[in-house]
Length: 413
Image (cartoon, rainbow, N blue to C red; front, side, top):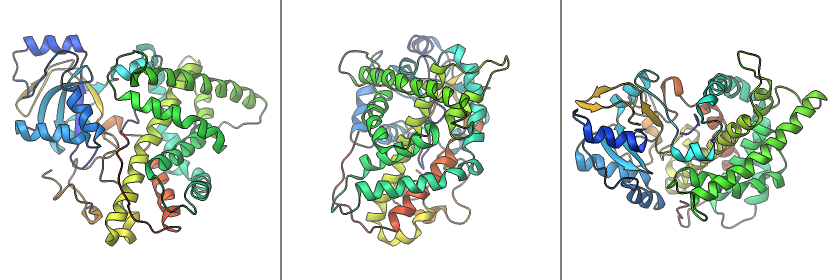
């Protein structure tokens, strides 16, 4: 899940397993950061989900930063005790100590939804995937997909926006972004085929950040079922692609799927079908869910700030499409006077941070480590160029067709 994507006030979390966390919390003699753990398992999850449902998950974190007067604090959400790190100094420290003091960590929900690709034996394949993705998703390689993205955008606007007096932006943007991801990763171009995926991918995405209770009807249970359905669909595509490659009716460089089928480990063994399926599903979720928030925000703010309408191509993002990245502490360390024990999982820089102001990025731009929308360090998001290109194609097609105004706002959380 390396593609899980951070706003002007960057918040990184590091998380730990429930049992280890409470052992360290009860027995550690170090000076742990301020904060509140509340009841085991539940913690402050309800407050976190309440803020998320209202469309402002960052409020949960910002309120506690203000309450504790600290850029580092502890809490417990989604069954996991959490250390929250905030600010450029923390970002620099964490980015500089990847694989030394902290490492990538998968939340319980991801381990259940993607059991194969997140298991220990899958990590060797994950390393191979991390080496593959930057090459496939680099700017030069993505130039081959500009015409396809542009074609999808044209068809999308003609079918879903043209002639409409009112449009629900976020659902339509997610549909467009899913279509692009299906094309780039799986060579699926048929809009009817993509439409069959929409609800399933949305169900899956909603369950990733949820209470991990696998009981019929819960978001988590629905997400597990959605992942099973998508796995079967993608594995069928993989089997057909292998046949097409043998018969020379498909090429090795046509999409990410072909690239992954071509890769082998140090023993010459190919990646397993189920691993490839899970990885691509995860990438599609990350590649369309986060970027949809950005494109929706662009439409929203351009309606609210007509003075920056003509400067839109200089905009990247203000709102956060993803609240945090997950890391696990692999060695004890001290930061800002606080003890961060092994196995814990881990506004002043922007005047008026809530104000949409693209000019803040002009000139030399923000200070280092204050604005890192794609993360940093060895685990920097490999999809940054993909996201930029997709946003530019969307905005180009949107602005050459329409003027608009915002009627009302709905939180789709």
